[in-house]
Length: 269
Image (cartoon, rainbow, N blue to C red):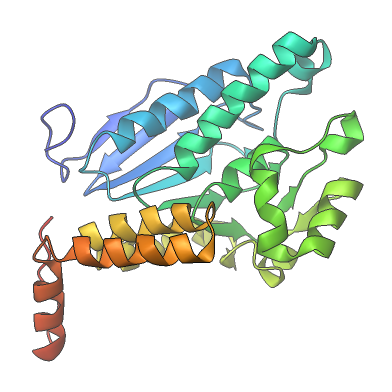
């Protein structure tokens, strides 16, 4: 059952702006609903955090997809908000943004970014907080902050291990965007598809995740997050603990029995 007593298989549409959430069969499609560019401002930032906090509290959530309404994933922060900040308000805003992006990054389930258009600045950092990224052909991804007088922060810190220090520096120090195709070459996105195929491509990826053991996926996601913030020896210990924890469920028996019997597994939902 969901957080409100609703089955995880029952379709649910939450239309409250500025994030629209459609839920069915354990999957939450979350749409930033401030078209055409879905510019990030305090209201949308709060909504992203609240949405992912609520999804994290509901164990019926197995996968989330984050996308944008209109022609952009999100083109980043609203410069009209940024321009007139003083140091105190700048710290307050960036701290709130970090909390929202961290709620996505720390989600106990896989999060897929369906990059339907421009993905810039804080929007790119939001996509980097996701575990997997599928982008439409020709979408622009980048960190243009230095071009308006501020550095790129928060999830931009993930860039050097993802693409190497040279490519990270190119993105961070020039502020120039790259295409989705270049981002795929660099390992920043998993797939690039025509716009009309984006939802189908993401849904296919969702189905591949749903075919796996639900508890194993949650354990694996927790490890992915922990591995990014620890040394190798500690990461190995986390892995040993996670492997052991898997046997507190029946998923290893179900999955391995299905493998040996050459049939699909019957994991609990």
